[in-house]
Length: 212
Image (spheres, rainbow, N blue to C red):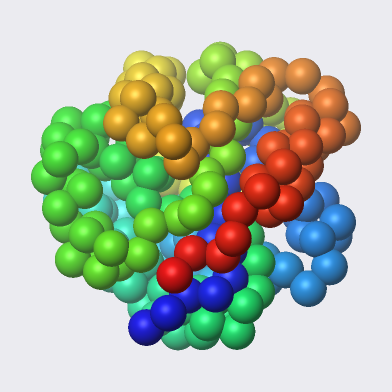
């Protein structure tokens, strides 16, 4: 089925500030659809609760990867695809690249293996543009600890070396998809990061025709 809108995803390690930035972007781009992974629709939000529940410490890494892919599939067919077919700009907080970095590299399952699982789930529906917010894990975790109102989930409780591997994984993914992913330094002030992000998005939207 033809896709007439633009699919823009936002990625980054925990504490990079992407959720804050994507909310600001959504306010700027009137009519854009803001959503998130895992979640965005009822079934996927239920799966999210299972994945991120701090009590589920026995969860196997492959189970985790498969649950993310399942939530992604339902979210895609129920919410993202219809919006794109209606010509909307879809702004999604996390997508496939998160699984590649977190489960593929940090969990040690293999980027190719996790990519294969997700190709089945998304049926080749990759983003048009991905904004990757890069930040040192130490700084990201400091931000999480300072933000008392932020949801603290099972992945936030991982040790520093896990978050370091996540960032390594993102850099590997960036090397794999350099034409789709734009890296932005997320260590600065929120307004500066937001301004840079909007410059990237506006340049892309003005230059590109919607994907078919």
